[in-house]
Length: 326
Image 1 (tube, rainbow, N blue to C red):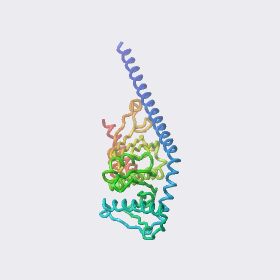
Image 2 (cartoon, rainbow, N blue to C red; image 1 turned 90 degrees about the vertical axis):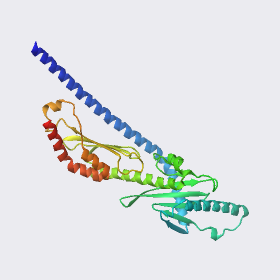
Image 3 (cartoon, helix red, strand yellow; image 1 turned 180 degrees about the vertical axis):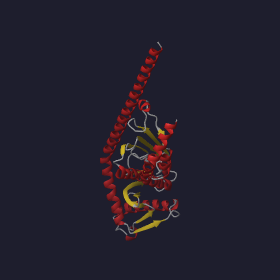
Image 4 (spheres, rainbow, N blue to C red; image 1 turned 90 degrees about the horizontal axis):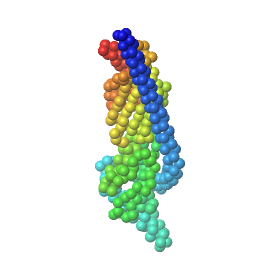
């Protein structure tokens, strides 16, 4: 009778182990499918936005290029000179120019070369143009590792010098929250609005290019790779070792270039030589790799990746040794 009870208990344990393994397999399959759906969804959104954005970009690019060609002077401004007083001067200038052109057209008066001078202002990686129609154009230049990347445009307009400005057109990626930034800053602090957009754009380029770089350098070692459009969520796996390593990083703010959260888990593979027969039958329990999480929070993504891979064999050895001791 006691033997029969043992056989029943062993049978129950086998069924439980099988159920756990089946649940783990289903969970992994569901996760893989979800990542695939999310990636397809993001690709579709990007394709849908590309055509309309391209038309606006081409038109604004031509207008900004015409303004650059027509400029008679470019003034470089430092941070102290970039203030509300200078912006007010620029706003007043574009409105005076618009009114003068309207009067010239109505009265058929010959243009005066004194009023045809066009001044642009360069502040760090942005250039401010005085556009026709009482508009101010900001051109944002982005860089990565010292190399130029995309150029973005934003056009501000107001009905009069005393009224608040609004964003009429822009070429920023649709997934960056320019309207929220406009609501928060433009009417109360236009300088802050212009500078904050520069921070958001440059940080987006930094995060995007870091992902591109690890794909170029380590693409053969990376399994699944998922990222949100603004690159504020990045996930990937490493599978060339005695375990499966899952990496997940998040950026809590759009101006961050180092993640605010990092989670790195090592999942033992049942086929690994160090895993005992009993552990292979049990549901795998992941271990956190703290050194990898610290690297991701303090180094650029390509540097952190190299650090993780370099230290991974030692970390896995310690992890397996600790599990065997337990």
